[in-house]
Amino acid sequence: MGDRAYGAVDRYYISNVPMGHYIYEYSPDVQKARGQYGARVFYFRCQLIADRNFKLETRLYKDFAWVARNEVGDYVDKETAAYLEEMLVE
View (cartoon, rainbow, N blue to C red):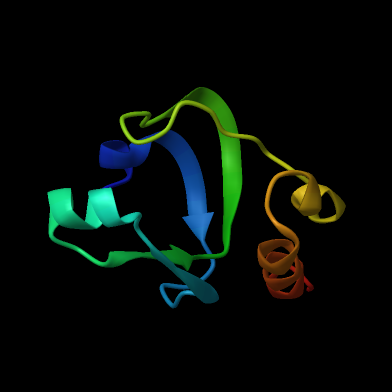
């Protein structure tokens, strides 16, 4: 998966199959500018191996957070939180 292209994070992917996905619609202005309806986000289960040299690629976002299952609702809307919490059940 070209780990270094996505930032210097030592991680282990449990599977190469997504455990879930989310599709969202761009605003009309973005749709026109990109010529695309929206985007798909795929969720993969992985484990952080070590946090040494931890550096994420930040061209597409400005911030991130590591959160526990019960904190997901503090960061996303209720519908998305319910979906993510369901995926995170072991």
